[in-house]
Structure formats: C-alpha cells, structure tokens
Length: 306
Image 1 (cartoon, one colour):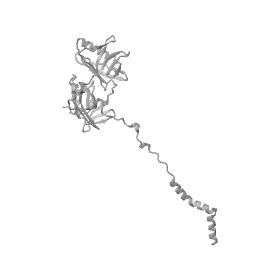
Image 2 (tube, rainbow, N blue to C red):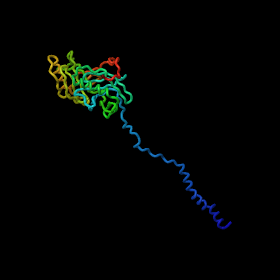
Image 3 (cartoon, helix red, strand yellow):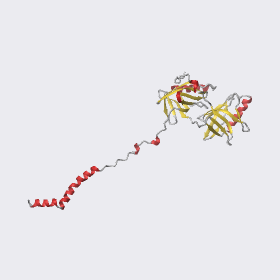
Image 4 (cartoon, rainbow, N blue to C red):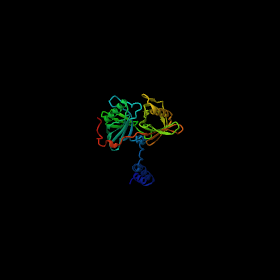
C-alpha cells in the first residue's frame, strides 16, 4: 500500500472521517425527515362560509294576508279603495276565504311548490255600493289569474303565467287593529255601555293604509287614523249621504263623537275595545264573522270564477 493510500485510510477511519461522513449524510437525513413532517392545514377562507345569520326566513303562502295592491286587467298594480280592507286567506283542506268591502268571499285553492291556483266561488253579499262591488269583482279576477307565488321583501307576490305581478300581500298580524269590526256596544254619556240599535249594523274598518271607514248604522263614513303600540288617533271623520231621523240619527251623533275621543285600543282575540285616556271603554266591537266553510262543500273548490 502506498503512502497516499495509507493516509486516506486513516482519515476515513479516524475522527476526521466521521466528520466527513456526517456532513455527507446530513442532506439525506434532512430530506428523509422532511417526508415525515405533516404541514398544518390552511385556514379556510371565511368569505366562503355561509352567513347563517343572513339566511332568509322561510315564507309560505298559507295563512291570512292583507292585499296592498292588485292588478285585474293588466293595467298595473292599484291600491285598494280608501277604507277598504282586502284580505286573502289560504286555509287547510284547500279552502280560500277573504274579505272585501262587500263582505266575505269563499272559494278553493291548491298550492304545489311555487305553483298556485285560486278560485272564488261566492262573493260577499253585503250592500257596499258600486265602486266597492267593482273592486271585489276585480280582486276575484286578479286571484284567478295567479299561477305562481314568490316571497318579496315585504311579504308575498302572486304572479300570472307571464311573470306579471297580480297581487302584493303582507302578512296580517292577528294582534293588530287592522280589520273589519262590528260594533256591539257603545258608551252612554254617563259611561255605561248600551247595545247598538236593533236592526242596524255599525261597522268600523281599519285599513293597512291608515284609512278608517265604516257605517254608523245610518250613513257610511271614512277618515284617517294613526296608531302606535296600543294608542290610536282617529282623524275627523266625514259622513256620506243624507242624515237619518229619530233614534238612528241620535245614535250616529253619539258614535261619531266617541270615535273622536278614542285614544287607545286593546284586542283580545276577536274582541276589540276602543277607549279614552282614562281607561274607559267607549266602543266595544267584534271581528266580523266569516260564513261557515260547509256552505261551499258541494262546490268544486278548484273552479275558477265565472
């Protein structure tokens, strides 16, 4: 063995050789170690996560709705007449009911997904004048044209097969003042309550548009009102037509005077009381009843109006 070979042999087997081997092996060990290290997962992008707080509340067409506008003839949406309270109620077992200025109408409905079909069988028969009778008829036509429903920012829209909005609806608050009420009793000057005159019907309708209208049992009237919480202010009321005579005239004067004093209201189910600032009851009314559903049992609930 040459002197160079013996020198190399001693270097590899000695301390220097061990150092050389370690230096040569370090990159390999580091590479092997890197294969065993698991990188932590990346944090998810928060912008891609669904915002559950912004999820819309599910809206379904079933229940009772107030009509805020409707279009029967393709001329654009029109609001109800001043003082009219128009409602649409989609009830169990395919029943359709609602209110107009001419009373309660009845019919049938079907809802399948976004598809809807409504048909009015009988209209209200209360005496209401030509304008309100025309309004009631136009409402039934708009209902018959609806083929789909869609949620809106304020409630519900009913659309025809061309996508034109035929009715706009807002949910009726069963604890609200809005609606048609039949006055049962009103206060005498001494504060005691007396029944309305026999053979007369005293009606008060609070519309969703701030219009109040009705009948004193003698003449129709209309005006405006505003309310907040359990407070209400009724603006001066205008009566329409020629005055009555005798007891009916005196009862009308008293009822109009009481309406002018009303500042508070309270509802308990189907009973409404209107009172003054001292807590005294001025007028007591009940929700006007709807006809029994059995009245349409023999009819086809899906039939469109004629």
